[in-house]
Length: 477
Image (cartoon, rainbow, N blue to C red; front, side, top):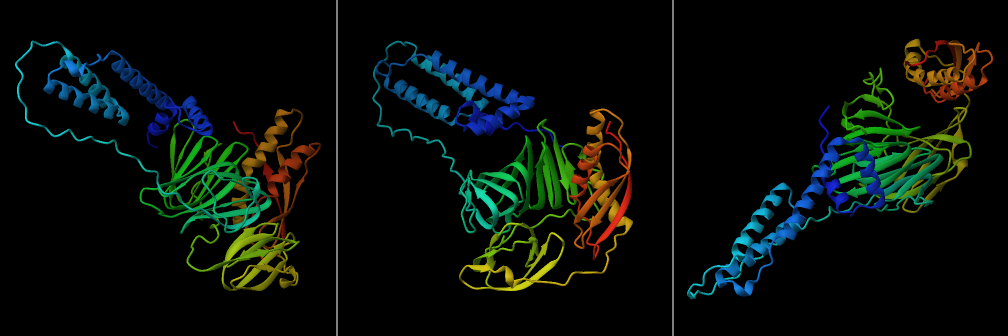
């Protein structure tokens, strides 16, 4: 854990009233919970007051009544003061302004007349211009895959270049993948929304409004920053692969490679080293450092090293695809950019039945016909899962199931804490059905539990399998 540093640049912009409405709102939310930044803002405002007082109290100078030497010296000091004020230096500038005001007052004080002295012509003092801070060059984020996705309310197209500030959203069963630069990009999952707040060579900032987004970040610029904002939290990384989720006001981070830092709304900093999982509701989970790395998909087409052609895949029954080793979960037609050549396409329907086919991609857009995918014969061999494969999934899902029990307790009445859960798993590891057994008179609690259990994913059992597990539920203290 490291000490929180004040966001001086943002506070200076806030004090000068040059931020956008969204920027001001974000700074004000941070100030509400950060004493360090509130003190910094007070110091900035005190500095402004001191400089204004120095400007008001400094005497007016009559350069015509001064001796030539004194007039030139006063003019030079006055010019330097104006340059210092434009640079808006910190506390050293306050001392310089006060000293310069005192010097000017001394120079302006009446003095006895003295004989004129002939002077040699002098060269004018060079004017020192304040340094100009140039904005870092903008990136050109390119859409590489889109399915049931929107950008600023319009359908998202493969190959589109996104501007800074663009808002992306996906519908149910939708996906959106974006390449920022070679080796760096993100994948927006279904029913999610994100805004590309900043996309520059010196840094990228994404604001996750809801849902989940997977990232792969490379060293795309020296000392560059890659930041994800969500619900007052800030996730900052350099060179890593991770997923950030923001669901029901809870932030989740699954880290597969590298390292990152999470800054909480309270100013606390938490560092994670892969593999790790972290949740805002409970900090580090019991499996925060799992034996295997969390599942984090790689955004599509991160390398622009070969000619690509737009391809559209559509099938009325398929909900999961595998293309060139990448797995995509999308029920709507998928548009993506693919290298030219021959590709093996695999897809699964909701029952787990596999469809396969070959797709040849040339230099013109391709739309794959659903009939090009041939279904395989149904598998009849039953699957198998060892207890060691089942236990980690139950452990991760137990906290969410406990919420159903806690909700039932708050509503009153007798609530069973001992239940049995029957789970049916497809050959890819997806839960095809979940059923609560031995639960009397609490249908809402049973529905809540089965909804959560239906989202679980187990290791592929090689065929359909059904098992039952006893559960003892308890409320968190």
